[in-house]
Length: 114
Length: 113
Image (cartoon, rainbow over all chains, first blue to last red; front, top):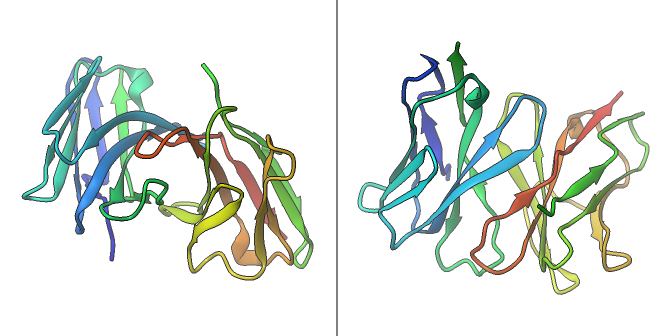
């Protein structure tokens, strides 16, 4: 089954605006993580939210998790051109062992224009 | 900040040849992973490695693939006889403790001709 489907697939905004990306998943999870990928580069970990948490902040990032709806959102406030990248959610399924794989969504391509 | 390093950054190989992709995980990490991303597609799990053995592998990780941690620092992915469809970006990741974030390298772009 597919996990971690993001929407929108692409988002184009102006600098200073907020960007919101959503992620839905199908199974019960242990945690959900958000990653950023600049073009042609590796995945940079942004934030991890556990299944018993509802909201987490890190700088300009705010992540929410609604386990009843099996969804998460990533909000980037006061966006900058340097935030231009692809953003992925990745889930770690529950009851899968501490070392289990991450299941990635297809990602949201964010373009922030100066 | 410690990081995962991967070499080479780009590997071009003829179909049927063997390739070895190398990774140096973060030094005190215990869990190691390989993922791949075919151009324009999702990042896909290949294999996880813990306590010197494979802990899980995906359907993609068939008999042509193997992993090794030969010297306590490097973590390698070997593809014995490459196919055109193996062309992808391969990412190594490591994790310190269970339920912590996985940290990724910059990847190796593998091009099979």
